[in-house]
Length: 445
Ligand SMILES: [Cu+2]
Image (cartoon, rainbow, N blue to C red; front, side, top):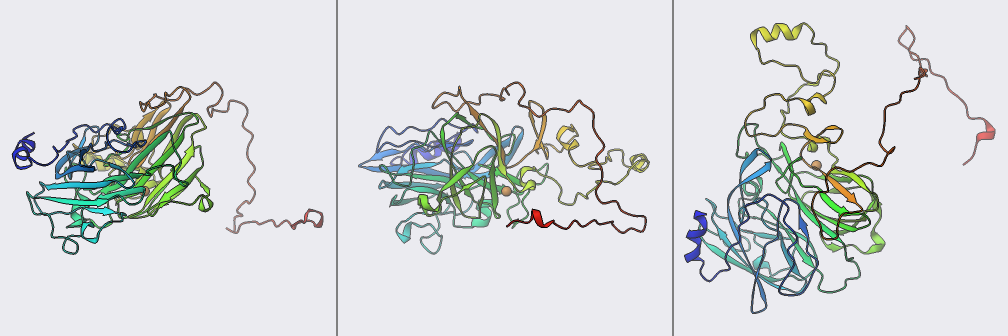
């Protein structure tokens, strides 16, 4: 790595920057110095090792251009940290003294804001307000005590719109230093950031001046089916931490289980404030921790409930074609435009199966295959896999669920009675309505 050799002499006194080249979910980083804690698993990401220096945890982040593979075969030129976008997850313990060296290898200045942390104002990372921006080629030092446990993020606060649109962000977890009344011990602790990009199909670099009209909806700069599954053992207590650095909200929905929101931006929530849900909205700039007991075996979808966020790049101007009869017209058009094809006359499901040619370096709009056929999803979608034989500490994908005999929805093979229609439309165009007055005997409040 050319960049690293340059760094070596200049950064002699700094911790060697650790660079990640893989897009796979790394095994949890079990701490070998400092206070013990139960590490998190970053989806398609990793945690940054540190160096202990006289009781201070020293990390080294390198802001630099990276190439992130968002899904197999779809690579995007991004800016990130230590080889990837997002940057590595930083894990520390409440009360830790933390020193972070930030080296700027971008073509412009940058800073890092430690989103949600209690810290001295001069460490908060807003360029111009709290510090001069870090010039190209320079290294700055941030140092503070991780004062409260919880879920945090980091991102630039200099040319922020451009740098976040290019993928600069990372996750931060501060573990409690001991038993905390509002933080449970869990068997699995996952985390990921919600992020969004505007990459024109066929191009490789995000458009950086996009304000709201993004077309790639990602978890940790990956899109389905490039997002790893969340694999757990039956009856595990599972925590999932989500941070939102896109420009819109994402209602995150889990199938098959109810969960509690056990933490927000401000830290763990008091148990008396929690209620069960199956969807929780994560607004822009927010962090949420959800917790559940994984007590239903199976393959359970977990996804953003905005249906266009479980789609990959598509033209926004595709007209709705449902119900439009193209017969005859297509042949005529194909005489002048041989590539012309009809989409969506009977809905868009054909897109899930279609092997139509797409521009180089893009992802199909809806894709992924399950054991029964196309899943017809993209973007912010993954699978929560609950298995009784998943070993503790084993995060490997157990493969597709083996459904017990007789538990899968099936085709009816008996007689199908004709369904009577309740309100027929008369030839005058008026609906015949029948009102039924409730009888007195049926009245109850
Ligand atoms: Cu969404």
